[in-house]
Image (cartoon, rainbow, N blue to C red):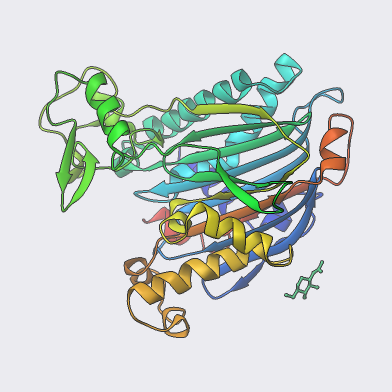
Length: 386
Ligand SMILES: *[C@@H]1O[C@H](CO)[C@@H](O)[C@H](O)[C@H]1NC(C)=O
C-alpha cells in the first residue's frame, strides 16, 4: 500500500518533461505563477497559466493533443482538463494522472469519441479514486474528505465536447460577423449551491432532508460543508461507511445517509464547432470570481495569443488586489497559504481554434502536445505527511 501511495505521489510530482516523452516543452515558473505562454495543439495554438494561493496547490490541469485513443484508426484531437481540488491536492492529482488514459481506453473500445466515452471515463476515474481512498483509509483517513471539480473539453472531428462536475467554467469566444465583435458564450454550468436552481434541484432530490443545504457564514453549503454538489472524490459524502471516525469530526455528519449526497455524474454538452468560433477559455472558479465571461473574452481577443492565459491570471489578480485596496505589486509578494486570503488558486487554459485545422482534424496527426500546469515543483514530502 505504501508503495502504491508513493507511486501515486511520484507520478504526480515529477517534472512533466521527465514524464511525457514527446511533450513540446514544460512551462516556466515565476514565484507562485506557472505559465506556458504558447504551444501547438492539433487544432491550433494554446496558452496556459496557473497561480498558486493555497499552501499546497489544489488546482491541476493538462492539455493533451494528438491521438485520443490507443488505436491508429481512432479519434484524434485535443483534450483539455481543469481540476480544482478541495481539502487537499490528492483527488485533482489523481484525475490528472488517470482521466485522460481512461478516456483513451473507452475511446479505443468504441473506436470513436462520444458523450458516452466521457461519461465512462469520469465514472472509471471516480471508481479508481474510491479504491485509493479504501486502500489508504487505515493510514490516512482524511483522504476521504478530499475531492475535486473536474472540467474537460475534447475537440475531435470538428465537434466540441464539454463535460463538467463542480464550479469551473468553459467559455467560447465567438465572432459575430455583422459587427466584428467577439461574444462570450458560456459552455458549462456550475454545480454550486450558491445558485438557487442548483440548490432547488438538490433539495428536490433529498426531500426527506431539510438540512441538505444550509447557509453558513453567509455561504450556501451542502450539509454545511461544501459549496459544490457534484465532484470527483469527497467519498465521505458519497459512502456512509467513510463518514465515521477517525475522520475529523468537522466532516462527520450526525446522522447516516442512504443515498450519496454528492454526485460524480458529469453534465455534458456536444456541439459542432463553427468557423467563427475563435477560442475557448477553460478556467477554475478562481478566475471567474474576478472576471466576467465577456471581460475574459475581451482580454484574449484584444491581445496577442502568446501569453493570453497569463494575462487573464494577471488581470484577475489585479482585480483581487483592487478589492482589497492594495497594489498588485504588493499582492504578488504575499506567500502561498496567506495568499489564499486574497484569491484562490487560478488556472486558465486558452485554446485557439484554427478553423482550417478543425475541419480536417479527424485525419490530422498534427503536433502532439502533453503539458501539465503547476504543482510539479512541490516536493512529494510535503504531500506524504500532509
Ligand atoms: C512569446 O512572448 C515572449 C515574451 O513575452 C517571448 O519571449 C517569446 O519568444 C514569444 N513566443 C513566441 C512563440 O512568439
